[in-house]
Image 1 (cartoon, helix red, strand yellow):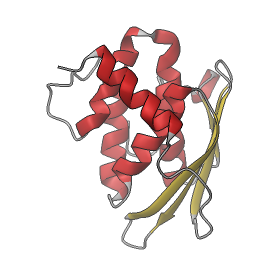
Image 2 (cartoon, helix red, strand yellow):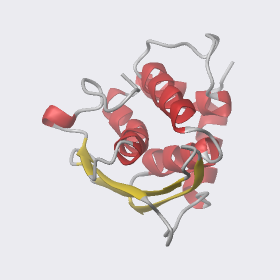
Image 3 (cartoon, helix red, strand yellow):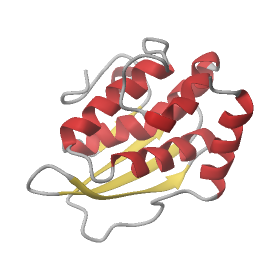
Image 4 (spheres, helix red, strand yellow):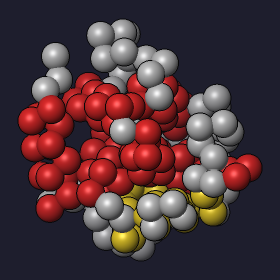
Length: 162
């Protein structure tokens, strides 16, 4: 059972001390994500190997605490994974935050389930999903993505994370 205090503690820790925050000089994939409603703006950079393994990943930008914590935990969890594994995690994270996947269901999210509480805060769901949607865009060589209109991650998917 995920408690509200654990959720808050994890969000605050990753907001204050984000993992993989910075630039990536040898990136061969990147995308820029924007959430106009909240003002979140992220850049995700990836070095994807010839074997489609995420060798390195970073993020930069200005965002709210939920978005930054989500990006931090996302980068820590997808580093070293294959593109296919990352696409699976993208779908599972999105499904969890909108109530289609329960933390007790079979999934690959691990500690990322602390974000299950976001589903009770509808205005914050897009904040949590933005890094994941931006990762999906980068993996599929789409350079910019938004949480609004036709690009809304709640209704549109890119690549294999449908």
